[in-house]
Length: 483
Image (cartoon, rainbow, N blue to C red; front, side):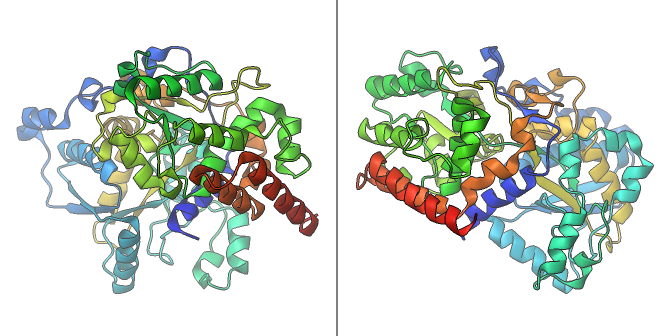
């Protein structure tokens, strides 16, 4: 399995733990879909530094923060500057890319006993804790209730060791003895952000060049109409996504659109292979791809694109719309796209859908881990707590274009692009958040046949009808083997 698919699988696995918060569709206030630079929403830490340098505390402590997120580095640096003003402690960031190289570097550092003071990892219980070299946070969280209660529950629960994790490690022959001896409730990393799938990003310049208003379409049909107008007026294809990564279309788009269109009962039957893909209710999933391809609305070559190349193509203006998640926005800005040229909305629902306003659950993406054996452990703990305070998260979010993991009481402190996503978080559970095992069926083996058929359609070597028939055969075989 390639790394992109592993990333999607991890996101889906984490998402299944969360039933508290829901990411709603972007509201009808289209003005909130605009974006602005970080300087419009918060004071510059550099200017604060100049004004207060003489009054700043002094310290010889210097922390090293290692990570792999180029797009997040401005956020870390902004927080580091503010932290230095408060404490005198210097925090230097080190960025290693790509993520595979970063992982190798961390593993080697752990083996050599030379881990940094703080390192970032994917958010998951005890991940990259290196058999106890990571600081365990549960005591600090219990001691500081105000800090603990500031987190979105979905963010904190997603990095907390649960009995299910311990049971899984116990069965894993490759797992060391250390994770098998962990206890429920232990925490080895602190979340700094949350995210969700099901986001469409639009290129404002291209859409407006076609004579259209850059705003959220009311329906799926209106969105397709926008793509057709863009193609007709500008010659630019309407849509790009990572066609080479099956989980992107299946898990970031198809499952939610089908749920909204057909409702709980029909969608559940479809996921459980009790209704066929060739059924007119569900056939849209392949017909949409076929129509885009025939009409020239899909970027040529999309079938071979992975996630990052698809983002790059969109950022370069090669397509008017792109499929992603809340986390995609930071990547687009990091690779050079002007944030003022981007607008976004939740994947649209078909006209007449049963649940056009369906909501989904966010999950933590990245966590910060502190070196439990480092000489500056206490200072590192202090920095991570500041980073995940409301003040630190506002600075971080505005400069990294990332959704904060804590509750921001005054949303106006966030830039408009972050407000548009953060304001759609609610504390209400719903059917989608309570039934992840149903919508995660798109990760099962038979869905590989779906993805293969989809690619053939994109390449012009198959039809929606033929691909649906192939999938229905695979689904029947899977159901027979897994009653």
